[in-house]
Length: 94
Image (cartoon, rainbow, N blue to C red):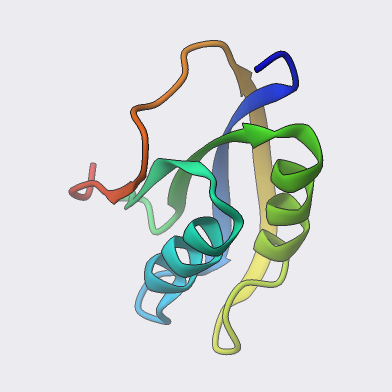
C-alpha cells in the first residue's frame, strides 16, 4: 500500500509497570496496525508501528496519553523503511 508508513517510537516517562505494553497492543490491534512493543532497560518503552498514515497518526496521538496510570514525558519518533511482519507482537526487554 502506498500510504503505509512505519515509525519507531521511544516512549519515556512512567511507562513501565503501568500496563503500557498491554494497552498499546490492544490499541494497535483495534486499529489493524502491525509492529511490536518492548520494554527497554533504561525504563522506556520502544514501539514499532506500521499502517495507513491516518491510522498511525491516531495511534501516535493515543501514545502521548497511554493508559490511565502512565505519565508520558516524551516520545522520540524515527521514520523507518522496513515493514514489520503482520500482526502486533510483544518482544522481550532489550
